[in-house]
Length: 253
Image (tube, rainbow, N blue to C red):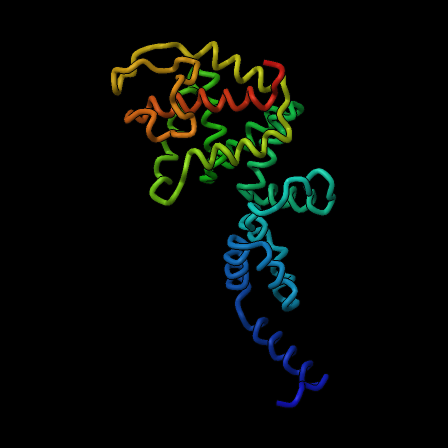
């Protein structure tokens, strides 16, 4: 087969461009949003493939859907382009971006309330890790927020048939906040749990719950086998959450 000449390549490019231009913009956005939600690399390749995709990829819907799970967090600290990209994703309501910004603001201790709000927004979008962190923090501080926090943690049970693992979620969260954990913020959360965790009988199973220690002889990674009681399991998970926070700031504790 003879190689394509320059004029043949130009004709093919123009033909592809006409086809793209004939498609509704909403359809192009929908297609690219789906691509973005599966892989940023695929989105980047699509942007390079033609001008129409490159232009459409700047729509807010794309930034809202783009998958950020594979981005190295170190890029956030030293790469201005990535930082701007992250801010755009957050502004467009990207749940992963809101979650990362929330952890950063909260655990660096400089914008605590803003961090909590970002985590809340991400959790409202069904972001699993944000739901775990935000729910656990609400339970730690007790009061009226405690039941809201428990309901959020209970909601994570719905993801288990889809492969959700509390252990895996916990480890992923731990890997992120270790970069930013501020001793004062961690101390406030842990102290709040100490003050609100009162040993009492569980209304669901009759066992004692909310003792602020992880029982000896029990593997803290084994969330499911700790208890058959959903309430007790999640109270103990909050205790583990606090233990991991403390470990991230040793030797303070």
